[in-house]
Length: 470
Ligand code: TTP
Ligand code: MG
Ligand code: MG
Image (cartoon, rainbow, N blue to C red; front, side, top):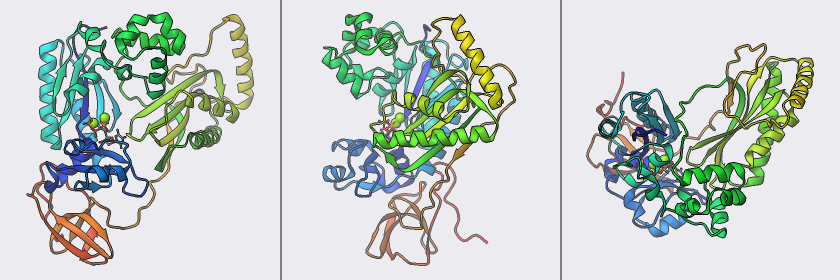
């Protein structure tokens, strides 16, 4: 493990809500809740001002409204958040070639690899400048953690919230972790947490005391072993930049997050079949089956399994995808699912059978060599033809023109504003822009022809666009 705190973790503060506050001057310093406003809607996030009332992510919207009746309630604007996210990731990439985004508002950066930090002092300096740059470019704040490993850097940024910087000095990690809940360790979800508690373990220190054998007994070799190492603050995971792997994959984005596990399984089977269709259509086969799950918060997990030989058999891909799904916690809801095959080869069916025989022979030779769950795409040896990634993302559903709370509009006379509320044939608009002061509210008939849907304005810099083009 490295000896300097040069792994940086950034997480934006109250991301969606802060973006809305930056866009809407009248909401700055106020309780803002962003999420689904329908009958079954849940809170995506809320401003820190709303958190004091007890509102938090994933809470049913109805409950949030009871706790904070005077907050502003807005539907998310993913296009805007994605743009801000790209600006932030751009700033991170100026620091290092090794940037690993975890979600729209969060990433690891290896500062050492970018030669932008090599010790504590240079790491602090770089992180401080980054925070200032983020604020200047996006108008938003982010919190930064610095440590010698990914796990500790992430814990540090959590401690730094909101709008702060925390550095964990190498050597102090174990003492810091000991009293913390096991849930702080990567890979410990509610289920594993409960399981450990039943085994008498609730803090990280208790994992360390229990010893590796006990952990393996409780959780199995792979999971137990890695958790034990994490509890001792041994985390060697490198920061991995996103690479495009050569693969054939299909994915679906869902309008409404899927919570039902049975439905998730069926979707994965369906995707596996479609993936195999594409694979065969392109006369390809591949060795590594990849499952992709994007959760409610845009965090994206991939799990992969490498087979002994390439396949284009739907049953094989389906089975592998189903196995991979078993290791993924989907309780919070799933926004996107994907199944892919990488490690491609352009074998024909006949070659495949030959390949299977070779594989079987190899298996006999190297007794006990289990097929690992390797992550990389790895080339599969013979006859590789560059196969460009074929991703089939379903188009976003077309949304009817409607006055959605929080979305931008333009009025022929009054200019740029946003929908504060609508109903009973009326729409209320607040006329303000990121660069203006808090604006005035006016109500119109919802079919007023002077009112039209508008694109979000940049949060920083440019003056609000001048009206009346041509
Ligand atoms: P987070 O970084 O978890 O939360 P946050 O940025 O809102 O607040 P914090 O200061 O504590 O980091 O998530 C980033 C965004 O992802 C968040 O702004 C909204 C979205 N999100 C959801 O849609 N649903 C969820 O359950 C969570 C946790 C986040
Ligand atoms: Mg955040
Ligand atoms: Mg986050």
